Amino acid sequence: MRGCGVVSGLPTTLHQQYIYAGPEVQNTKSMGLDTVEIVLRTEETFNINLPDDECSQVVTVGDLYRLVLGKIELPYTRADEIEAAGQGRNRSHLTMPSLSSWSPPDVWLTLKGIIVDQLEANEEDVTEEATFLRDLGCD
Image 1 (cartoon, helix red, strand yellow):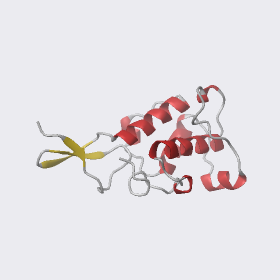
Image 2 (cartoon, helix red, strand yellow):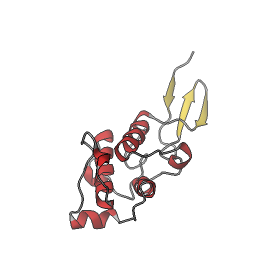
Image 3 (cartoon, rainbow, N blue to C red):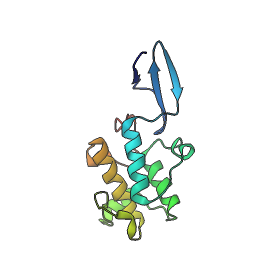
Image 4 (cartoon, rainbow, N blue to C red):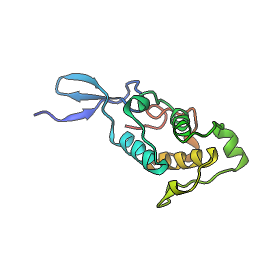
């Protein structure tokens, strides 16, 4: 049996990957390892469920941020305003981060922390407008 590898450089959402299996390329809804880890850590950290159909719409970090805010029923606050005001705290490395209440600044900084940690990205590259695949190199 032939091995499978991810074909990079194709325009996809966070949740879609194009898998190369033998001589043909198949469009599947399979996630790469980085994507799986980001989704799993996000679900665990915020104690939410992110179904495939919702993840399939996520292209940018801002899309994921707004999805998480919607799941925990918080209003949207622009990330650049949060960072300029120095609000919130990153809870991505806490053992039980979802036990206390969340604020939009906490959500943004924690989600950003997850992405920086998982992708080994530069903190300044993780913006609402950054795409997971093109800008951050997520597989």
